[in-house]
Length: 385
Image 1 (cartoon, rainbow, N blue to C red):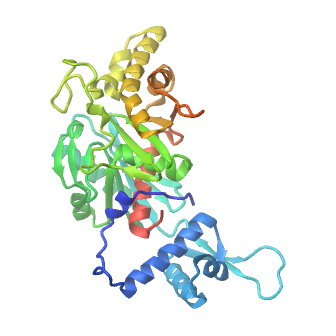
Image 2: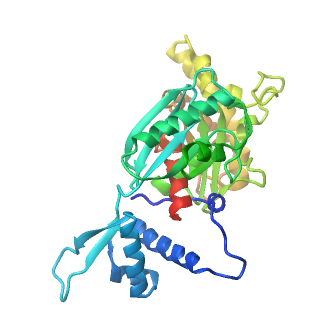
Image 3: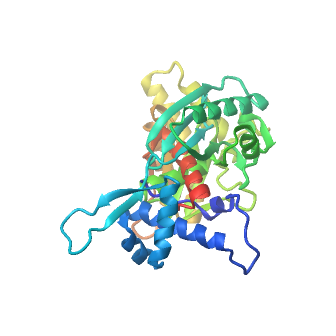
């Protein structure tokens, strides 16, 4: 199972009843022990009960109780004795049961449709669905979201831990979409709406934040400093710095799509003019290259890449980042657009020591937001980090 790494802010979204300050309840202790054992099984692979006692520093009787509870919940299974010849009684290994539970995931960032999947505890996709968004916005877009989520839950082959959602817009830690102009959502309690409609735990985050978490969770290597730009119906960024997801006091960190690039330029869905989003969002990029020759299209995409690079450069320099990841349709992004973005960032920033900024495509491709949504659920429901 891939290791999942979430942020402190994502943890704050977990809907648990806290014990009074200074008082630890038995249920809190049991939950901590359960999470600790699961985390070691995720990180280190199958272990014996004696191994787990040594790794966690917990008493063997405690480990036996915790493992028994996890087996009863079908989250852990016995895998047989450890291979090889050993003195004494062979140790029985236990490990995470990949099909003991499933996670439903939604990606609402596409320019034409809403995508969803069901994955097992190892991240293997077992069900995929999508629904056309068309011109649906506002309440109609909410209805399409519920429709897609319900189809996923119905087709899941077993118990579903919860639903993870990556959505454009500014999203609070409790799952409220404060503002998503492209979907015409404002002050929408999306998490609560989905919980009421579907009856399962729901965890909601900004799509770019979700994709950034996924890049670090499943690819490993960006948590120290990563800027992921999600280019879809809108444009936003997720920022990981020193292992933490940066959200800002109002959840607006990474909202680069509404930085003014061309004063008095094209109108934006936010109500202003000349924002980055109308210049480099996927619908606009498609329109910019429609009907052009290959050379003309490359020139247009290079121009758009330079506009993005101009916005990214001060962010990269100020935060000391060197890993910039682009996520979006590869036929538009991976080529002249990405190359122009990188060359512009390099031209406008000064490297420290020998470390230069690199601009690369997401290793997860189109599934970054979906993988990030799964990570949110693993963290929120099982405490895996």
